Image (cartoon, rainbow, N blue to C red):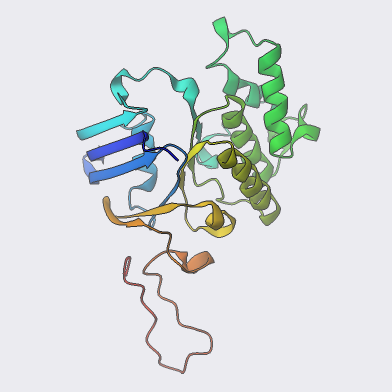
Length: 256
C-alpha cells in the first residue's frame, strides 16, 4: 500500500437546499485502502461521496482525486461509482448486458465498444455471478441481482478507485456474500475502495479503516468498531439479552 492519496477532502463543506450537511470534513484515502464511511441516517455519508464525484457542489474546502483538484479532474475512467440502488433503476427497459456495457463508455472511443470492451463486460458479469442473466431485462431482476448488475457496471470500466454508496442496502444474504467475494478480488488486485455502509456485515474483514460521520463532522477515523452486525455502529445502544432487568444499555460512546 503506497502513501499516494487517491481521494483527499480538506475542510469540505456542502449544503442541500440551504441546510449545511457537511461541516468541514477531512478525509484521505490512500492507494489500496478500503475505507468504510459509517454513521446514522442524515450524518452526511452519501453527500460526502456525491461531493467527491461532483454530484453535489461544495461551498468550501478542497477535493482532490489522484492528486488533481476535482474541478480539473477529467480521467473518470479511473473511477467506478455504484449509486444507491433506489436512484438507479429509472424503469428504462434495458438488458443486463446493456446496463453493464454503459460502464465501458468512459473508455470507448466515440462510444463504440470494441472486443476488449465486450470482454470486460462479460468478465464483470462473471465476477458478480450474473453471466447467465446477461440477456434478461433488468426489470425482471430481484433487488439483490439488480445491485450486482450496478456493481458489474462499475467494475466493467476496470477502475482504480471504486466508490460504492450502501452497496448492501436491501440485498439478500446470498448477494451480500457474492458482493463481498467480488470486492475481495478487486482489493487483492490493488483497487482502492470507499464504501458508504450502514453496517459492516460481510465486508468487515476487508475494511482497513472506518470513518464515522455525525451531523456532517468526522467523529472517528481509525480501526473499524469491534462489534458485529447492527452493533457495528459506535454508540448503538445494546442491552444484552442476558443482562439483568433494568440494566443500562452498553454505550460505545461515539454516536450515543
